[in-house]
Length: 89
Image (cartoon, rainbow, N blue to C red):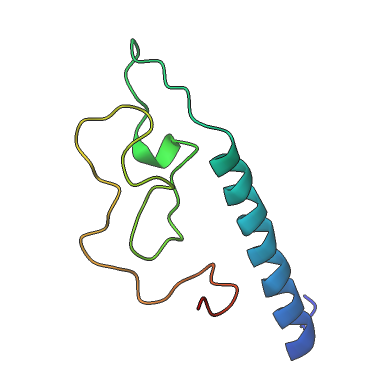
């Protein structure tokens, strides 16, 4: 198994974060079209489920699949933000 130098591992982490950011941006650009006649999927199976978010579990504040119970926000936040790319002013 190859060991990465500190520079290589930092570069790889930034590339991973940039990839996640691009995926999230693409999901936000295409509005969800849920089928209200079907049962909505469980949250971990939903394309908008984001376990890496610190305060939420979903990309949206309310469920785009039409669930009546709002479980988008976490009861207890994660210890650290996993996708922060920089400081937001």
